[in-house]
Image 1 (cartoon, helix red, strand yellow):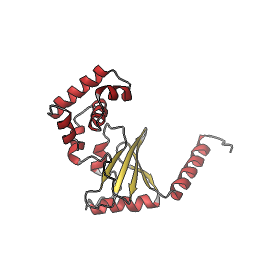
Image 2 (tube, rainbow, N blue to C red):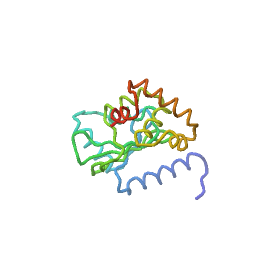
Image 3 (cartoon, helix red, strand yellow):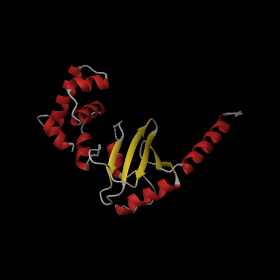
Image 4 (cartoon, rainbow, N blue to C red):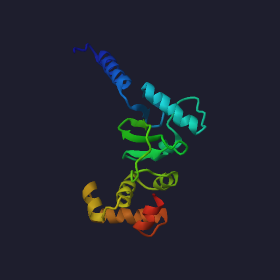
Length: 182
């Protein structure tokens, strides 16, 4: 394919992406980093409306649900959430360099998945991005040396960030941290 300029390239790319989105069996919704809707496929639109309708938010314009937006102010790992009112509806929110990709699923989140409650999300907002990463790995049961290796940090840095997390969240140990973020 030969493009004659940046506009032709952007049109072609947009056409390719729209075609892919419409054929995708997944319910996909794309948001910019502030939560404003960028694009969605037909299935994503219907599932997103279903999500918001069940919460009785009655939003005029489509936007990222508040609980999901709060989850990624500063987060950088995919997050799974169960709809609070509809047990069969769940969402996976994935950060991208320009915003978020929301995949809405017609299945509940499996037992043991990384689901965060609204209370846990509020607690994580008190932490820096780096502290959030450390806290999430500690809650999954990793030791400090394992966290350090996974995040390419020194064990002393992980220990410092974990102590800072304990202080900010008012907990004394890993067990209390796990309970808070459960």
